[in-house]
Length: 336
Image 1 (cartoon, rainbow, N blue to C red):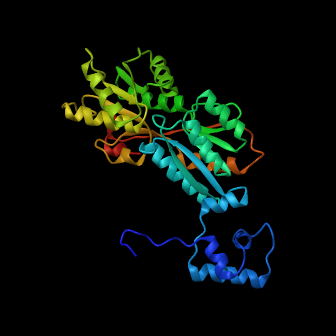
Image 2: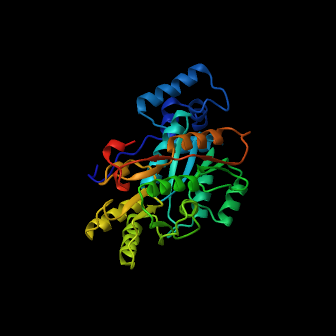
Image 3: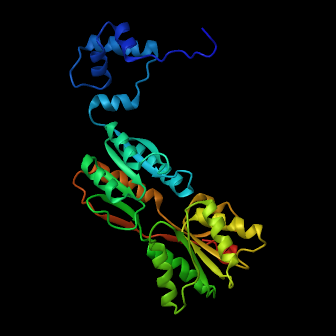
């Protein structure tokens, strides 16, 4: 055999030939139906599976059953630490429920999200989880498919679909209130460039309640580069802010890099609070004070909703928890 050729995988047809039965009978044995198989025939098929080392393909088995124990997950940019941890939490929750998870990374620059949704639906998945913000057309497509669907990480109600998220405005308010307690008065916000952000509303509400004017507002992509570039914008302003609320840990980490590169000390010169509560927030210096989203709880809720046909289609929002670290000016003794 040439060195670059790999051994052919054992197929269902190979099992059928070895056992002396049809491929349909092999399917009935492996899928426990829909037709019954005589005990001796069943044993011949299982013996062939053991001898040949056949491993059924999960996706093919799902298609053959006409319904699936597999859930599809469409996630926006799984390089983002938040979405990476959401994927992990959802995978664990699905496994605990006896389901598997097929993950597709949303790439709106190359493949239309509607095409990715159709592709997942064609695999006859038993449910769909979307960790992305849908356009009106994409939402209409999802509703037309008739597949149990949950949108996760949402700001609010998604008509006709289950949705799970946190109280973004309240979480942001709590983070800004903490910054105000430090005595900071000029507090900036760096958040979404694409749409109005509930975290921005929480920032404004906290400042208004403290009778403080809004600080600098910078709209940036949710990326390390977005955070880096937004930090440079703040440094170019005539009056440098004393503190900033970043809409994600990823943005905040990009800001830390920019400030460090330009000799700006955090929190001595500029304090930072962020949003998400990802693991990486504890492994930068200074560690990030951040509003923690309960990802595991959100993931379990999403899976439960997919498995409950009678669940009311509404938005479920959970509170965040402010994890206090050094980036805001707190000392290790105040570590929570």
